[in-house]
Image: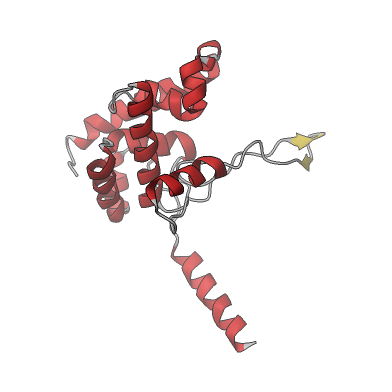
Length: 190
């Protein structure tokens, strides 16, 4: 009983340490002032995978708006009864169970968490590195990298995204955010 209470207290303390999303998700300089560790995380992903920080953070902005525990919204039956979620996507990068498992196997990183920014940026870096190798997409081409990220490598190669104005719109938003972050990072270099 005492052990259970101790574990419960630890869980509450750890959850209490988690911060919410940044106060201004559109300003990367302000984000990095609020979340100092994230600059180090971005540097690690850049060194390991060649992930430009502005691209990585733009993907996080697009996928979760910096919400660590983000999940896809549930559809509702008759507008009231919650149904299953449309995918297993979770965390900052909205990585699905399958993609996260592939990442862990490929990198040998067993204890990574989707709600950890460093791990999420590493995942995005790994995924974009794979897109670069498999599909020839430049690591600085946020638009096409996001299309591959959203559609999957097979979906991108097959061009399924070409028929979807929604997916292309998401990619445009990610690319636009990456361009904004790139300009801002010139003033607050990490």
